[in-house]
Image (cartoon, rainbow, N blue to C red; front, side, top):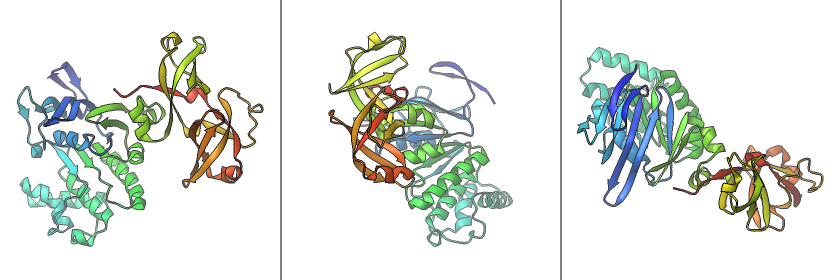
Length: 389
């Protein structure tokens, strides 16, 4: 369905289930949100990722109608539900939103059936309709046979499913999940990631997934917005954020990049190639998608690359490397076993530069007793990143 709507940025045709326009919120002198803009496609999962205190939960509360922003607009299903300038504020219970809290917030004196049925009872639905909907959603989340159990008789995973069932039972347009897996043990958390993603796909419900866990957001979300100090630092697909972080904060927060500061000493426009000096002791070639290298020469920049884009030759023969671009002699300082892969802390010889590489578990024995190795960094996988703005 398409909704022509007049907003403060002009006439737009709305095809998204959720739109947030220039949303800002302050608590005293603290800027909790600043000019937040989001658009979420129907049936997709948007991950809101950021550290504690970054503004994630404030954003969720504004969307849910629990908090009133200082400025901006919010549209749900094409309907304007919040606008300070137009004096529009739709009450939370009228926004067609289902919400799951970090603590689950189940009523301890109600059994599973009563907890799930509660939102329908307060809306005054007929008893037969309540029974139909509760039975259906309990089946969807896999809680058949537990209808008469009380929260204290359930596991953490089962309590989470009750909370989800309660949020889904009145068929909301938007599902808001606020750190839904943070209180669950690691093994069950992995299982529930897949289960929640499959459930959202099955129901085709638009979802905002709030989390501080990078792996959780990358594995569940279709798109991710990374937020810090109330500002969205970058939006994109998990692959885009992982491969091409836009700034220092994103690169550092995702925790999977090597980040080096250097000065551009030269390059070639034809090859779109920059030569970057790191601390005056190491030269790295970057195959950069830049219009004119002269815009960079003499300037300090940050570069980033992933551990899996570093090739290690255990023989340590730099001259024998098939590609001598960005190939250096180095030594292994430490090997960290991380299950499916090994994280290798490397030091590039005569530079003082340390970087982290990833190798497969099968190559662990090959490198365990090899101190000196040849290191090659793929110049096509090195990206220029901006300072935080």
